[in-house]
Length: 170
Image 1 (tube, helix red, strand yellow):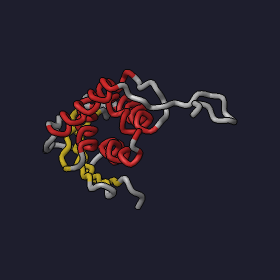
Image 2 (cartoon, rainbow, N blue to C red):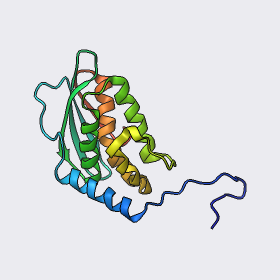
Image 3 (cartoon, rainbow, N blue to C red):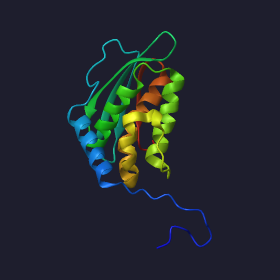
Image 4 (cartoon, rainbow, N blue to C red):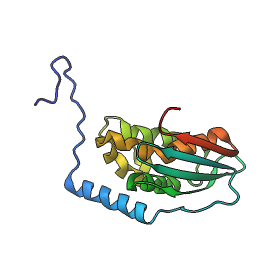
């Protein structure tokens, strides 16, 4: 098998993980799914987003508190789901807490690209979230990884109150 298509002479991006990286990926995912960070209620949340992934049963309740400038002051989540969805939510809340709206939206775009695009380099700004890059090898799991991110995007769009998001079209 050649890395070039007959009509296209550009190299194709292949996602091969070296064993040490794949082991780290698995360890981080398991750690965050077993002991999620920022898990629980946020009583003074400005907005709560209820998200679900009907394809596999993941559910998330994301609570967000904004600062005076519209940035993300505090964020917590609860719910249940597969290891990927729980780890993604845990890692996301750690990374986004204290970020401005612009920084959150940039992280959202970068994370989406990380789990969907055929790129070999993950942005360093994603930090520990880069371990989620392996999810793209399993397209059916991308929705699991993106659930919390869709919820935080909805929280910023909503601004206050409650909202619902789903990984499936209405």
